[in-house]
Amino acid sequence: MSTSTPNSTAEWALRRQRQVLDHLHGKGQPEIGPKATISHIAIYGAGIMGSGIAQVAAQSGYKVTLWDVTQADLDRGIHTIRISLARLARKTGQPADWVQSILSRISSTTDQLAACTSADLVIEAIVENLSIKQDLLSRLDKVAKPTCIFATNTSSLLVADVSAKLDEERKQRMVALHFFNPVAVMKLVEIAYMDGTSPELLALLKAWVHDIGKVPVLCRDTPGFIVNRLMVPYNIEARQLVERGDATIEDVDTAMKLGAGYPMGPFELMDMTGLDTGYHIMKAWYETAPGLSGDPRFKPSPEMERMIRDGYLGRKSGRGYYVYDK
Image (cartoon, rainbow, N blue to C red; front, top):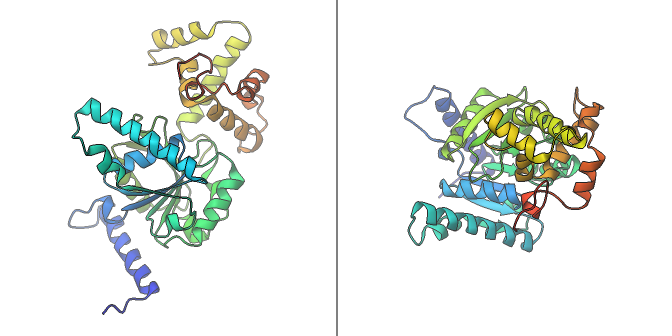
């Protein structure tokens, strides 16, 4: 008969995780992969990003619990995953039961706390609103395992701000795991870390990102991380060229594809990533980002405000800078 207590179970889990971290840091034998310490992933938000992360994690053999506010939200997310997997199955010639075998690794729930009680990794991919993210993670912090790693998929906020309401020990296990849209296709994951993040935890997360078929890059917790810090000013300059009447949307896109060798122009890119995503990044930087707040470059223009208000968000809405067949 087992005599383990909740405390002894937690202590064992912490020891086991330290063994895996030591190995990934070059100290352990025999070889241990990330699944030895991360096997169950709880993902909050079943939208485009959350469902995409759930898909790639399940494809790589991880157990996934997907949470959202309503069952309708979850149904849409699972439907999106099913369509994506079916498309991939046709393209790669997978057996008939391949799609269902992956979906069987994904469970869904509207029970916010139950979703994370046994998770090894929590990934938050909800609305880009600081207070809502903080409140969610604060609630989860109280019920998640001591060993559970917390991550945000934010593209505009600082990890330090998102984690502000967490216990101090959990803050040391909090990072950004910034995936890119569409998650199933885009290879990059930015791992943004704070000063208290251990090298061992970063090594574990890099190994996990590789295990789900992605490529990790590391960045300190700074506004925009790497990609958005470079891309947002580029997109702003493109919009201002057009808004001043200096060039057309089509000519700007053509110029950057043929002159700079980019696979798509800035307006095509903004339509793909979503105009609302870029808008929220700019707004957050203009209002609160250290070293960037108040910079007039990042204040959304009246034209951009109008497009957001009218629902012209890019490919996902059928219209942005270009018009698409839905």
